[in-house]
Structure formats: structure tokens, C-alpha cells
Length: 216
Image 1: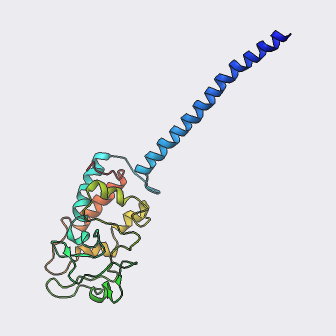
Image 2: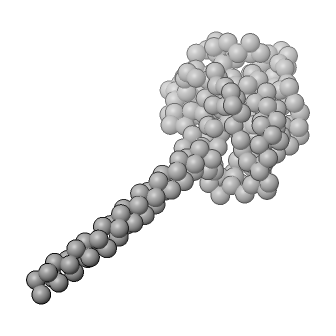
Image 3: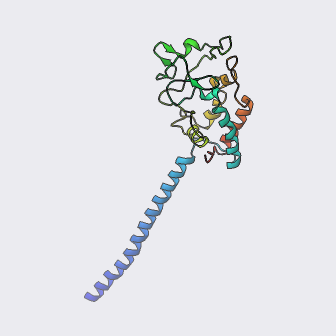
């Protein structure tokens, strides 16, 4: 009887060991899958993005056009790496040295709207105008200056860096009043390299084909 009890214990141990191994394998596999999935989402996810058809080649090709516009002075001058806007076709530091301020509309008496009126001021290289002229706010600077196409593409679809915009808002932003002002520059200033219609088409194509970031 004693030997019979020992044999039962041995059999139970033999069964328990494989079960333990199986359970541990399942936990490790689930953890690994979750980690991989989260890692992939961190790289590719855009909130509520409604990709019509993923096409990395078309997407990257479209972003090359988008990038050419965003890096032109008409866009980049208001997306500097510092807290002073850039100015002119050569993107030099703004002569008046206005500071960003918390809301992006200037600091103390140096408000953007003091010089940038609702419409362009007449005259060669006079201040361009818009009712909402400003830099991005201090907590969401959206820097374009010095960014590679890879860095800028990833920044533009990151809700923690793009003003919490989802797919719908990103598409709508192409028609934002201040964006459109880039195609109504001050007299004597160059236009962006593409028309607004061409830019908007490339912008939407980039987003709807997967919002892929170029390798560089």
C-alpha cells in the first residue's frame, strides 16, 4: 500500500511538471505578443486613422511633396526650433525678436497681432496678415526647422506632438486659415513650391495610404 501511494505521487508530479511548463509558456507567449503589438502600435498607430489602402510607396512619395512645402519659408518660419519666429525667404531670425509666449501669440507687449493684422499690410515685404497669426503654443511647439522627413512625418501623426489631432482633424488642418495664409504671402515673398491644391492632395494621399515615414 505504501509503494502504491508513492507511485501515485510520482505520477502526479510527472503530470504537474508538464502542466506548469505549459502554463509558463502560455504566459511568456502572451506577454511577448502583447509587447510586440504595443511596440508596433507605438510606431504606426494614429488615433481613428481610416487608411483606405496601405501603400508604402505611394505614401512616401506623397510625403516628399508635403515635406517640400512644410520646409519652405512660408511654413517653417512659424515652426522654428527656438522661441523666436523666423522671417523672410532666407528664414533669418525675426528682426523684432518677438518671443513665443505660452499661447504662441507673443509675450507681454510684443504680441504677434500688433504687427500682423487680419490682412496683409500693403507694401514690399510688409508684415503678412491673418486674424489668428501665431506660433504653435509652448506646450506643443511642432518644430519643423531642422527636422528630417522621417522625423517630421512621425511627429505629424503623433497626437502627443500634433495638437491631439486624429485622422479627421489632420485632413481638415490642410484648410486651416493660417495654413492657407502660406499661399497669400507678403508682397515680394515666394510662394510654397506647390499650389495649395497640390499640397492638399499629397497630404491626404500620404495619410490615407498609411502615413508612412520615409527612411531618412
